[in-house]
Structures are given as C-alpha cells and as structure tokens.
Length: 227
Image (cartoon, rainbow, N blue to C red; front, top):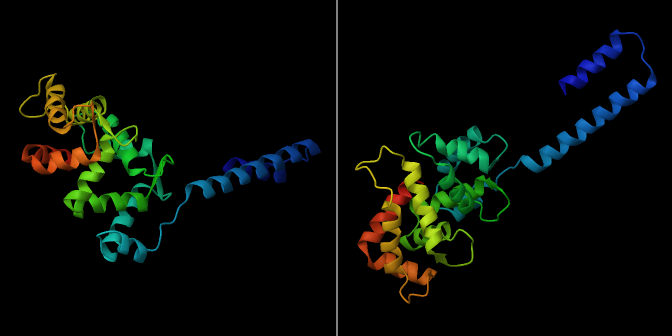
C-alpha cells in the first residue's frame, strides 16, 4: 500500500504522464485492494462467544479471556498455521528438534483438517489435556498416535510419534538415551496393546491396555507433559 501512495504522490507533484500510467496505477491499486480484502476474509477470525466456549470446556470465562489474550498475542490474525505453530513450539525445546512432533501435534489440534488452528480448536484440546477425564485424555492421545486417521494405530505410527518425542527432548536427556531406545519402547508398548496380535491397535485395545497397566499410563503421562 505504501508503494501505491508513493505512486499517487508522484502523480501529483510531477508533470502529467501519459494516461496509460494512470490506468496502470489504478489497476495496481484495485488489485492490491482486492488482495487485501481477500486476505482479511480468509485469515482474520473471531472466536465463538466466551459463554459458549465456557459451556463446552472446563475453563471459566475469566480463564478463557486470559487464554485468548495470550493466543492473540502470538497469533494476531486469530488463527495459527503449522509453520507458526512449529516456531512457537520450538521455543520450549531449544536443545532438540521439535519440528516433527509439532507437526503431529498440530494435526491433532486441527480437527477439521483445514491447515489452521483457531482459538476454539486450541482451547478445546487444552481443556481435555489439562482438565479432562482419564478416558477423554486417552481418546485424545489415541487420535494423536493415529497419524493417518484410519481409526487404528500401527507400529510404524507409534514409532514415528515416540521417535519425534525423543528427538524433541534432545541429546541432553538424562540418563543419555541409546539410539535404539525408541524402538525398544515401542516394541514393549505394542506387544501389550495389540491384544489379538493383528498388527494394529484399536481404540478399545488402547483404552483397555492403558487403564490396566500402570507403566503404560505413567509413560503416556510423561509424554503428555511435553504437550
């Protein structure tokens, strides 16, 4: 827009130019105006009423107001795309590579698969992770591990998530982890969860295994802490 105003100023102060220059300027002005309007339409987003979100989550209206101010501070447009999400998340894990795990986490937050996360998406997930029941937290975690969203977790998906978590924690973990630690971890998990040995873990198998095995629950709670 500054370039347009500069062009307009030069048209006023300099000698009159051929009409094709004015036509060109008008075309540029209209194009920029249309692009700005389209960008505002697609990007800017206002959340649902706080009363509605209060009814849908486990947060009070006051807590939602505080959360929204923080969200808007990081994401002035009212939505966050994956690249911005990764940049924000990386700040909390400076000694590791959080990009892969942030990618999986973003997809879990983006429940409508639109490529952007609105405040409603963010606060709904946060409500489950911080104040949801054990069953709600486990269902959310299952969705995180179900990368391709086919309703099952296979061993490769579990390996991808667990490896991403280890990568994010970085080389400064204590005790120092061996390279094959993620694979060993997944082998133990999957053997316990895949009760009928068909190579996939269903939601029911996941819920049952987690709730009957304290070691699995403790591990999942540690993984949830990095969220």
